Image (spheres, helix red, strand yellow):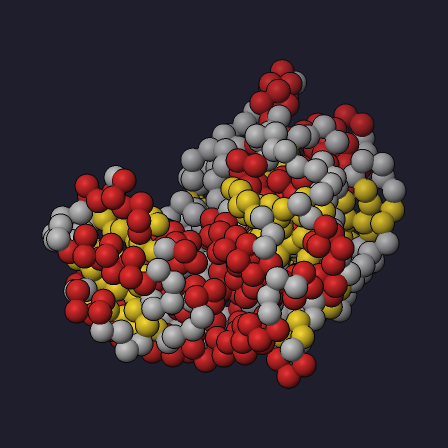
Amino acid sequence: MCGIVGYIGHREAYPIILKGLKRLEYRGYDSAGIALFDGNDIKLCKTKGKVDDLEKKITKEISTTGSLGIGHTRWATHGVPNDVNSHPHYSNSGNLVIIHNGIIENYEPLKKELLKRGYKFTSDTDTEVLVNLIEDIKDNENIKLGKAVQIALNQVVGAYAIAVFDKNKPNEIVVARLGSPLAIGIGDDEFFIASDASPFIEYTNNAIYLEDEEMAIVRRHKEVNIRKIKDDSLVNPYVQELQINLEQIEKGGYDHFMLKEIYEQPHAIKDTYRGRLLTDKAIIKMAGIEDNMKKFLNANRIVVVACGTSWHAGLVSEYIFEDLARIPVEVEYASEFRYRNPVITENDVVIAISQSGETADTLAAIKLAKSKGAFVFGVCNVVGSSIARETDAGAYTHAGPEIGVASTKAFTTQITVLTLIALRLARAKGTISSSDYRHHLLELEMIPDKVAKALKSDEKVKEIANIYKDAKNFLYLGRGYNFPVALEGALKLKEISYIHAEGYPAAEMKHGPIALIDENMPIVVIATKKGHYDKIVSNIQEIKSRKGIIIGIVTKGDTMVKALADHVIEVPETMESLSPLVTTIPLQLLSYHIAVMLNKNVDQPRNLAKSVTVE
Ligand code: M6R
């Protein structure tokens, strides 16, 4: 959950690393640091705070010349965020310097052993233990850095993506991965190292993604040498052509990535169904489903595993799969599933949903499900991510890079993919009539336009945000397909504005949460026409009689809720099963505007990181 960057080649390393760290800040932003080799020695600067803080400090402290360097932006796991715990970390001799993303779980016994051998530690980090372990092995056995890294990593339990270099061998960087991503950009006589390809996208289109338990020695003027950490066998490098471009990872005139990503949704949803939704032929074409159709059709049930927003998309899919394809579905928090000895057999299909494809709990849930013989299907956004590789088959969402920590377009594109799958299975099983099926396809094709119309509520949402920005609590209510949307709306508000918010199925309110309602409580109610409308109207009446403030998300032209609510935000009409794709838009905008008005860091909310690669 940290970002790592490295460079070795013929250019100045510092500007490349600094820019790369800014692009990777979504992965963690509580401290940052850079180590450069200036031709004679290592120059290192690090600080608590953001990459901007590092930039202000670095030129005052060190010379930034040199064509080899590594940099880090941190999300703390061991040790509080402060200057000392920031990366890079030196070994005791000062010869080696390392950056690390992940956790060394057995760092305490390793540290004890090293302390006995006279090593000293200045930080509280597991990383400083690792670099000294490497140094100890290297010096004692009088071996090269690469070999020492390999031996050390075979003693380590945990997860890592590391980059380390030796000032006495300043023509190589040794990198390795287990459980945390690591890409090597292959330029013209130069190499880039990074947690994802965004730091080097303007320099090269070619990259190698290291697999788990692989390490590489990246040498100036040489080929990349990749080996298995366990048995030292050589690996043939697979060079991939990158599918992202610079424009996609920049803000493009928006104040925040989150706002850009909210506005990208019409386009992103179209990209998700492009080539898959063929309305003229009334066909849904998805290779991952066609190739594994028997598995899906013979499945006793589908078990969805995911975290956060992806879990909410999974909850929406429960309604879709059961409603359309009549397949029983269970939706599990990956973090619970992985530790509770779940009953999973080879007759289950497990769908793992993840934007980043790197979420540690989801990855562990996949491994567990596979070990029990289940067929695991991935729904990921990041191409080539760990989850995409670990699953038996899958479908990408093609949403483009999502940089804002709060997930927006990932949610709607995940729902789009899951809807396509459910419709395809429903057709194959004969649980949907051909007219209903066609109707769904046509409606789905119109969703990008409807999302674009829902985005027109932005000004109205902003006015409402201004009225309620100082509220201490919010409730979000929805029913049926829109119950998960209520959960998602509450999560968005919590994570970027730090206002306490709860999502509930509207009818559950009377079993407890209704006690919270008074004249100070804003309650966002998703009350669109299709699906439980009358029931929702009754729930609204119950709230009104307790003086709660209603912000209704209603179908365009609605009058009944309008007459009861304090405010309404209109969204275009669509079928109930597709309604989450439009009702979620004003909720995303509401949380965005409140957070901006409260002066919060929208794209990098406190304590969070974009991909949670630790437990
Ligand atoms: O990359 P993933 O979809 O696996 O991430 C799962 C959650 O960490 C993520 O959705 C998180 O809840 C977001 N910050 C929500 O906006």
